[in-house]
Every structure is written in C-alpha cells, then in structure tokens.
Length: 537
Ligand SMILES: Nc1ncnc2c1ncn2[C@@H]1O[C@H](COP(=O)(O)OP(=O)(O)OP(=O)(O)O)[C@@H](O)[C@H]1O
Ligand SMILES: [Mg+2]
Image 1 (tube, rainbow, N blue to C red):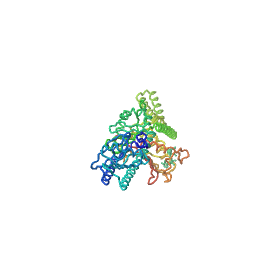
Image 2: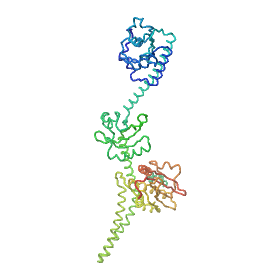
Image 3: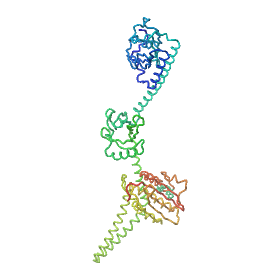
Image 4: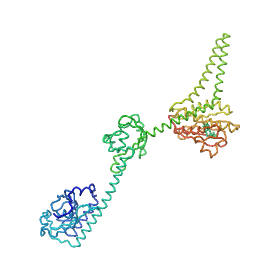
C-alpha cells in the first residue's frame, strides 16, 4: 500500500461524529454524480465516505453499467482506489489498472472497473470525509477538462461540508450553553411529556424536592402535590386553559422527606413542532420559602404597628368613652338607690323593677367595654365573612360620643343587598375609624358651622363594596393629595401620620383600594373598595 495517514484509526472519526449530511444535500450530490457520469461518459461516478473500519458508497451515479450500489460497504485496507486517495489525500489517476503492476490486483477490477480518477474530499479542518471519483470499464486517460470538472465538483462538496460543520458547531455550542443553564439555573426545571411523565429534571429540582433525577424519570409530578392544595391547583389549571399560554401560580409542594415547601410554579407548554401535538411542557419551580418568611415578618410588623395605632386611637377616645360610660354608671347608681328605697318601703315589685333597670344599664356599660376591648385586642389577623354595614355600626358606636363632643353629627347611609366581604373585622373597623377620626379632626380644626360626617356603603361597579367617609372640613390641596397616604406625613401637632398609611395597607391587603376626592362644595371624601368575599348577604 502507498504510504500516508492511517484513516482507519478511531481518532480519524471522532471529530465528525454526529454530523449527518441532510437529505437535501444528498439529493444535490446525487445530481452531481449523475451529471459527472453523463458528461465524462463513464459507467460510474461516486462519492465515497470513510466510516472506519469501512468505506461506504455514499452516493452512486444512476448511470448504465454502474456496478456500485448506494450504501454498499467495503472494508478498509483491501487496496481500493478510493482508500489510497483518502490515505494520501492526493488525487489519483489510474488510466489502465490491468497494465499497472501496482493496481492490477485491486478489488475494483473484479467489478470490471479498470480505470480511475478520484479526488479526496475533506472537512474544513482537513479531516478526510471521503472521495469523489469516476470509474470506467475501459482504459481512460481522463482529459484535463474532466479533471478540472471533477475538481470543481469536489470544491462544491467541500463547501457543503463547511456549511454543515459551521451549523453543527453552532448547534453544539448552543446545546452546551442550554445544558449549562439547565444544570446551574437556580430554578427547578422539569420536562414532562404528553402523558404527564417526567423526562428530565435538573439539579435544582433535586435541591428543592430531594428527589434525584433518576428517581423521578418516568414518574408523574403529582406525587409532589399537597392533597389540600389539589382543589386550588385544579382551579388554576382550568384558568390556565382559558389563557392557553404559560400558567403560573404559588402553592405548596411536598418534598421527598415529607416536609412542605412553598413554591412558585410555572407551566410552559412546549412549542417545538414534533412535541406540540403531545402537549408536553416544562414545569419550573422556584423555592419561595425566604420570600414567604419575609412576607410573614412584614405582615407581623404591620399587624403590630396597626395594633399600636389602634391603642393610640383609643387613647384619643378615652375622654369621650369615659363620658359615655358615665351615663349607664350613673343610671346604675340611681336605680340601685331607688331599689333600696323601695325595699325600705316594702314595695318589692318596684324594688325588683329598679334592679332590672340597673341590670340593663350594666349590660349597656358592659357592651361599651366589650367594644373597646375587642378593638384593643392584639390578636393575629383572622379572616371571616363580614357584613360591612355591621362594621360601620360598630365604628359609629365607638366614635359617636367623640363626634358629639365636637358638635359633629354622624350620618349613615347603608346600601342594601351588599355582598359580604372576606377579611379581618378589627382591621376593617380600624380603617373606617381612622377615616372618621381624621374627618372629626379636620372639621374641628376648620371650625366651620356645618359639621356633618356621612358614612355610606354601596355596591361598587365590580360587585364588591365601596365605603365612603365624607366630611365638611377644609378639604385637601391638590399638591398634598399624593402625600397624605405616605407614612409619617401629618399636619397635626400630635399626629403620627400613620393613620392613612395603615388604612391603605389594610385595604390593599384585602384586595381593595383607597383614595380621596375633594367635595364639590367643601370637605373631602375618602373612599375604599373591597372585593366580594361571599354570596350576597
Ligand atoms: N378628612 C381630611 N380632611 C383634610 N385633611 C385630611 C383629612 N384626613 C387626613 N388629612 C390630612 O392627611 C394627613 C395624614 O393623615 P393621617 O391619618 O395619615 O395622619 P394624622 O391624622 O396626621 O396622624 P395619625 O397617625 O394620628 O392618624 C393629616 O395630617 C391631614 O393633613
Ligand atoms: Mg389620622
């Protein structure tokens, strides 16, 4: 054999592993060899490909008398013409093998091919792909023109290989980048097939849930669902079906060790064509424990602040509440004294009547104290179904005396058929009381003669509840409208400036909104909305 590079070594194939020549290019190459055979008047034009330890007929001309079938395979090291071209990486011309000692016993002669012209075909980095060649069953010198033609086509082939290699390199880089992202992204990514079975899961998935990828492959992600969350989950999925896009929500999942972890879940349907019909999807989880803890801390701090503010408000109301208590206490004393007198006069019926009246007053006094206690209590927020008209009545009971002391009358206008809302009763009382106290303070400060405060409830446009508190005070300058809701903004000597900030955070935490408008004549109207929580009351 001629000396040259050993093309049968495994290193010779490593670099090009995985690059497939696509069918469109094979089609084009087929036309090339067909043309070559026709123009050169030879029975056979071939493109051969080295696939150690073999050499394969990659494309074979569809010409008369061509003995080579596509995909035919021959072993290397048998002395084929093409094998020599590949090893030497040099063109080879054998005009008549029968007259050439070097070639007269080569295997192609058995197929009747006694002349050969071939060129090596290489990948852009010089690795051998194979050959392009023409074979004839008679002596053939292959004129200079034919050689040039074959060389031209060889260049076309090499240009195609260059594009293929470039695309392949790009794909490989992109794939590696995606793999790296998949491995290192701080979110659990799971690929689920149309049947709901896990196809892939990344290391973050193991970190969050404790399952190694091998433990979840082929399984369903339903094992992670907390049974109590199922209903909500089903609701989210139905909602997601309507949007037909990505679906994201927050929930709780079970880890392998049985503990629970709060997560955000995003389900992204796959768009790539071959899988789209099977509705495969990516499911992306993020561990939101830290955020949930921070939210819980913030919620606690806000609750504590709200509590402090409530106690402070009660402090402001002390004088009027004490005054309010004086009435039933005085009546108790009167009735008890009367009872003693009736007893002395042996009139038991009247004595009993006086005691009964005294008991009624005790209940009245008890009711005032109950209201104060329940407002001052420091309980964790508790959500329940609430009738807002009832909440307004409770606030009016707390603030009525304070208003009266300043010559202000509180009017109410209760909307009918209001939906109940779902919320914390004390917090919502606090919102209304803060607005009422501000209104009382504003009207007192303004010193005007009409001192009316109107609290009204109505159904709002989005079938929730809207509560408004309207005063006849000085109103608000347009430039302060944006500031009054900021914490610590106050124009009052003793004001903390927290009232409205607390009102806003409470209404927003209840899914509502709080705003203010200037009245047409005088004063301001604060309004807040709350979404409906349950069926119509
Ligand atoms: N009804 C109102 N009419 C006019 N101005 C008002 C009214 N309500 C609030 N304001 C203005 O908004 C400011 C902020 O009100 P906010 O209730 O937040 O704090 P504050 O009443 O000053 O103090 P506190 O923390 O004790 O409630 C008030 O100082 C006042 O200037
Ligand atoms: Mg205030």
